[in-house]
Image 1 (tube, rainbow, N blue to C red):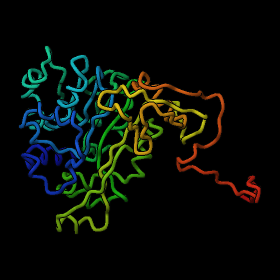
Image 2: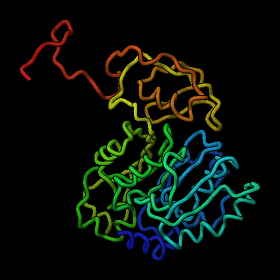
Image 3: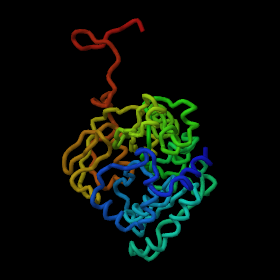
Image 4: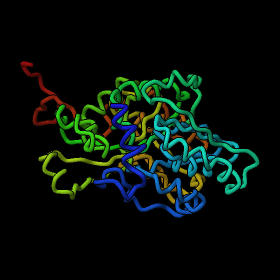
Length: 348
């Protein structure tokens, strides 16, 4: 499978126009600061972009970032600008042709950004076996990936490697393709379907399972969209399988509850994260307006209080009293109740 992917992205595809579907494309409306950062990236790097989402989380200044499957380096060069000269971005990829383009323009981008020294480095390696690259454990603030994990033959290992390399409180923020069911082996063996980021996609429930097994206890969905397959031949092969591009954020926080629990907590966002002055979007269900008291579950409280986001919030409450499941998070009391609302005994 590695050789199939290397051939597809190193030899079959020469630029993004060669893609046969829209799975490995990004249709997200880009915010102004991302458009400005992209304007500084060399056009040759931009032409070999095959991502499916926007992997630019908030609060990157000074962060040490790792890009899994960096390709020609587009996202690395964008995040390098947001991290600033005090930050650093490392990109890992297994495809020689892509890495050659990424490395060719290191000096160009250093000058374009006005940095005294380059804050980007590229490495050849496999994202399932990052130990070979000798990155230190607990050393990265953020790990990103853009439509690459679906191409890996061992996705569980990728997530475990990422968890090992993240600092406590660090975050994996990545976009990928998911399916609404498990995909048959004959489709997985199709080189075009696999190379187009379709037949290697995880069933979304399986993703949640392996993410939790890797240590990411409470995966948070940031954004998603339906992938519409327009090509009739490919659409026919895939039959009734539905595909989605989705961006998740996973935090390395071992003390998270397995479900959202209510401890009577709340937060107030002070509006000081660059480019996010009016609100902070943790995920699809947590859009926190500046200055407003926002009730949160214990997990959300930790995702803000025990990570790089701590300086940007005020925190109300602690974990001294538990009020049960946090209302509105999909967990309800499973027990029967009498007419007065109290739980009643059942046979099982």
